[in-house]
Length: 265
Image (cartoon, rainbow, N blue to C red; front, top):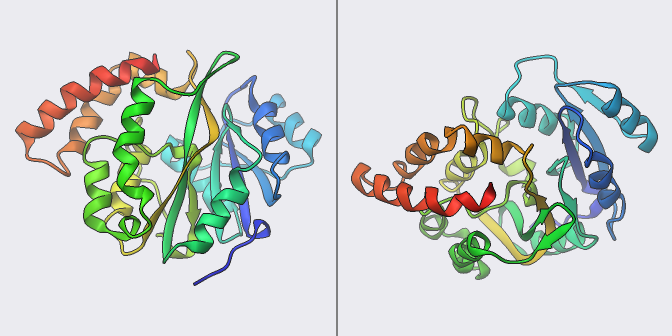
C-alpha cells in the first residue's frame, strides 16, 4: 500500500479564456493546509492567463495540439510529474482541508484509482450547501461511504448507472493505476462521466470523502450551463445510460435525469 504526501500531488489549473475567477481558484490552492505543486494549463493563451502565471510564479503550459475539453484535460494531466493529480477548474474554490483530507483517505484505501469529495455550489457570492440535485447525488453516493464497497465493481457501476454524482473538479487521480489517456475525445458534457464509467470496470477503489471540501461555481458562462442550454447533454446522457441499461429503460431514466439537471441553469 502506497503512502502519499502533499509533495506527491499537483493541482493542474485548466484555464480557458478570460475567467474573472482564476485568481480566486489559485488563492484557494495556495491556502491549502498541506501544499503540493500547482501548474496552469491552457489551450487559449492570453494576457490574463500569462499575467496570472507570472503573478503567482507558476509554470504555464500551452496545448498547441487538438483542442477539446478532453484534449485540454489530458494535456494538463500529462504535464504533472507527481503520482497524484487534481484537475482544478478555473472557476472553482477548494477549501483549505481538501488536499490533506484526500491524501489521508487515499492512504487508508486499498488500491485506489481516484479519490473525490462532496461539494457545494457557488452561485454568485452565495454558497449553496444543499439543493435537490446535490441531495440526489449524495444519496447515489451513499454506498461508497463504505470502504469495502469502494472496491466493488458492481457497486461502483450501480452508483454511476443513475447519473454522474461524482464532481469532476473534486477528483484526485492516482496516476500509476490509470491509463495514460483518462478522458475520451468527442464528448462535450459527459467527458467526466464516460471516464468514471471506464474506470469503474477496473480493479481498484473509488475513494469517497463525504465532506464538502470544494465549491463548484454555477454561472451563465460555465460549460455546464452552455451545454444544457444548447441541448447537447441530452443525447450524451442517453448514450451513457445505455452503457448500464437496455434502451427503453435508459430512455425513461434520461427523461427524469434531464429534468433534475435544470437546476444548473
